[in-house]
Every structure is written in structure tokens, then in C-alpha cells.
Image (cartoon, rainbow, N blue to C red):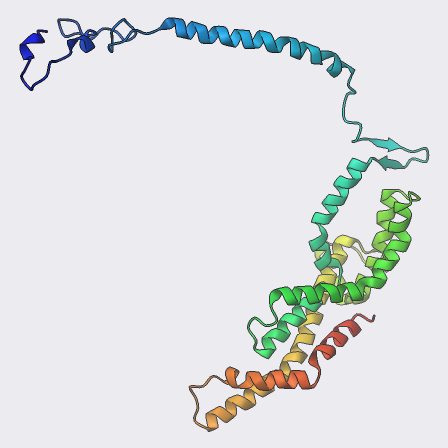
Length: 300
């Protein structure tokens, strides 16, 4: 290609040296050759990088060989995860396994709180009370949950005390294995749940599961007692909620009738009746009555 013929065409000289990779016939030389793109591939740089990697491996190899005696002298397995068998046939778990079991039990705590305590009945009654008053978000959900939680602790405190005396205390003093402690801890909860469960609900779930009739309450399994207990709690909570709704419903009907007779059909009766319902609830000391009724319903 004659580049000198193109000198001065646009005021510059074409640098043909950059295109030395192209043959005179117009064919492109294979990449990697000298001058393919105006530069020469430096293969010595690649060989130098490979040599650096080999040198690094030779430096790290003595360090790895130095750790081999330490690895050989280590004990096989983790000493913290062991179960030791006692002379009487019992099993003793290490601290790590006990902590793991404790964290697993904490993850099941919300389900146990709803399925085995008085929390379900209390939170439903307080939610129905808020609907009866007509206050959409007062008290808030956080207040209702907190009030239900602490009232449940007050109601369940005799059960918790018995669990601590019979199971948790001896287990912490290492006087009782884990399995026996769990069995003894379940007895107070079983007694509480049986007292609050209706016989009809027990018979219902017994017939669904196909189990035979039980001779005593101790023969009822937990898998059958829990759904029967929750069903009874729902029935009782809605019964109490129905009794709470009646006086507030009467106030709404009276206010709606008065507004209709006065021709104020466009005014919502809920807005007018809300101050009267709150005033009535405060005058009769409604919160004390509700809390006392809920506590008395569990025969505390």
C-alpha cells in the first residue's frame, strides 16, 4: 500500500507503520504474530507470572508442612458435642447441646404461648372490646398484646411456680435428667388445660383421630389435648365478647334512631355514639371489670 501518495490529502500523513500486520495482498496475519496490531506480544511476561506463582507455592509449602503435626495430635470430633451415658442408664448432655436445645425451645415459645396458656382468650376479648368501643386503633395492637401477655403471666403464675418446683429447679441442681424434667414439667400444664377444655371438644378430636375412649385424664395425649384446648378457648372468648358487645350495640341503636328521627341521615351514628360509649365505659370502670372477669374465668 503506497501511503506516501496520500500525503497532504487532509493535511496529515497516514502512519502506515500501524498497519504493518496487513499483508500487501490485503490478507490479515494471524493474531499473536509480530506487528498484528502494531505491537509485539511479550511472551516473557507470561512466563514471569507463572514463575511468581511457583515461588509463592514454594514459600507456603513449609508453613503447611509445619501444621501437620498439630492436626495429627488433635482429637477426632468435637469434645463439646458428646452424650455421656450414666450408670443408671440416664444420658448427660454437654453444655453445647444444652444451649442448642434451649435456643430451639425459645423458637417454639410463641406457639406454646398461644396453645398452652390463657393468652388466646385474653387477646381475642380485648380485640372485640376495641371493636365494640368503635375506636379503630386505640388501644393499639402493641398495647393489646402487651396487656394480654402480662395478664397471662399473672394467671399462669401458679402453674409456672409448680413447674419450677417439680421440674426446673431439680434439673438446674443436676438432681434430675432432662427427660424426667420434661415429663414433670408437662403435668401442671396438662392439669390447667384439662380444667379449661370442654368434654365435647375432647370427644370431637378423639372421634376425628379415631382414638378409643380414655379411662382417665392422664391418658389423653398432648396431640389431642392442644387442639381441644384452643377450640374451647375460642368458644369462651367469643361468648365473653358477645356479652361485651350488647350494651355498646344498644347505644349505637339509640343514637341511630335519634338521628333518623331528627332527619340527620347523612351523619354517621358511629361518630355521635363514640363519646357516649367511652363515657359509659369509663364511668363503670370498664377496664377493671374486664380484667377481673378474664382472671375469674380461669378460676385463679
